[in-house]
Structure formats: structure tokens, C-alpha cells
Amino acid sequence: MNIKMLGAFAAVALLAACAKPAATGMASGAGATVTSGPAAGSEEDLVANVGDRVFYGFNKTNLSPDATATLSKQAGWLQKFPQVSVLVAGNCDPRGTEEYNLALGQRRADAARDFLVAQGVDGSRIQTISYGKDRPIAQGNDESAWSQDRNAITSVQGHNPQEGMGASS
Image (cartoon, rainbow, N blue to C red; front, side, top):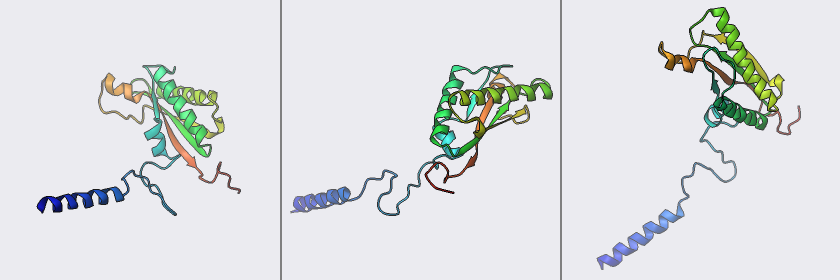
């Protein structure tokens, strides 16, 4: 008798488990919204799904293969979200004069922007700025830290969800 009861409970539990929807992070039905993951076209989306920065060698402005791969992804992302404008900020490590690093940071930002434009992104959607050595991202006073500070960082500046989606103004 106990085996039959145990079997019945197991069958009920199995049926109950099958009746529950799987936890997929996706909602369904009228009015359902998906709440997991970053909003499409947001800064968080760019960082999480594409990458927001490229790195440069010491005193260099040329794009490495890794940098062009990241910028190619950024170009595709920007083409997917034509309503988004970005700022590309060029940065340097702390060595060198302020004037030299501001000019170098600008050349780095311009190199990233020029690559995006060459990939078909409208240049009017891309602003550039140089912070020189004023915004280090890595702690330390060695090559490991400095290599992280030599970068161009792309950030979302403007996002109008109504643009590019068939809405009229």
C-alpha cells in the first residue's frame, strides 16, 4: 500500500512540475514585458553586448586588430540603433605633458570615429573629446595600469526611442 501511495505522490509531483512554465526570463501574454538584461540601445547594452572601449599602444593612434574588431561591433550596433548618438573620448596614460596628451587623446578619439564612419555610421552621430591624462581608469603606476589608460571609450549620449521606429513627429 505504501508503494502505491508513494507512486501516486510521485506522479502528482511530476505532473505539477510539468504544468509550471520553465523559468526562461521571458514573459508572455498580453501586456507582458521582459525585465532581464539591459534596454536595447542603452549604454548598458553597448557595454554588455558590444564593448565600449579600444586600447592603444604607447604614443600610438593606430588601431590594433582587437580595436578594429570592437569598433566593427560598435558600427553594427550603431547601425541597428540609428536613434543613438555617441561620444568617443580619447585618453592617455599619465606620462607626457598635458598638451601632448590632450592632442594624442584627440587623435585616438578621431581614429575611432573615422573607423566608425568608414563602416557606414553617420559622422553627425559621433562627437569626440580628449581627456588627455585627466581620467585614468586603472590604479597603479606601471605598464599594466598605463596600458588600460591608453584608450578611446564610446558612450551613449542621446537616445530617442521614437526615432527610427516609424513614429511621426
